[in-house]
Image (cartoon, rainbow, N blue to C red; front, top):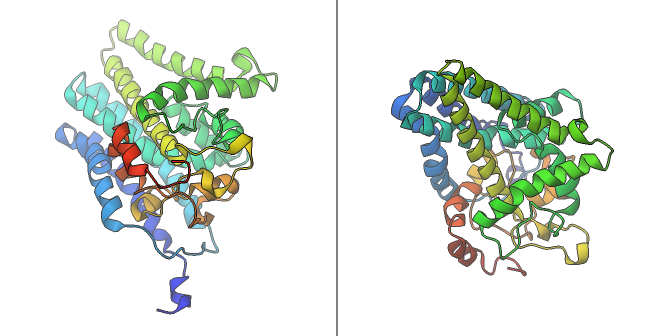
Length: 342
């Protein structure tokens, strides 16, 4: 095979595979019953298999000249999320408090993590107040995590792989303890970012976002007390879906920097983030796995991110790492010897 063939850009259509999960979740919400498990089965069951079966990309490809299809894809992901959320709310209101409500909540939350939050992460790096940036804010509000963009852009990127970053796990931390520390830690950090700019109280976007989210939840609960029985399963389902989406997001934060530390707060280098070229994770998660380049060039769009062959490498893609990560001793055993500090 000639070099000219090897170095062709990958077909952009491969990234359309990431739309499978929201389409399945929407179908499950519309069909109800056992079909509400479609998102859970696909992400927790089939996703890890695809990560392993499709393997890793061995020959890095150059970016395409035009990013138009990728920019469009971000908006498709974002709009599909709100379709999914709408169908979920309708399902929850009609289904009531049943086991299928829990199943639909899990599917919706997992897909929100794999589709909506990944999109919000990318669009959150757009110019503030731009249409893409506003879409990112709406996506994050829909899963009750509206402070993420502030924390990610203004603290995580600045202090990643140091003790000042609550989203960078230490070697000693297991996933469970990381969840307990990072979620409140990131909110507190985002509040501090705005406080330093003189935006305090409800003028602080992080506090204001939390207030609006609680107001929406309390309004639904008020409707329930006035006899609108459908409001309670909507609230319960929304909270379950938001929780699983947030936990999944923070799982990804965990594996991207676990155990990697900058000495004395030195400059960020490619070795301070875990990478993987697992095809399924790359294609379906919009190159989120090329994480070193994202930190080295935060303004570069996902379709231009480059792999770093010498960066620490995960044993597999993000989907396949999920189950081992839930068992800290197994996770440490899998990761041993993969980086100088681990």
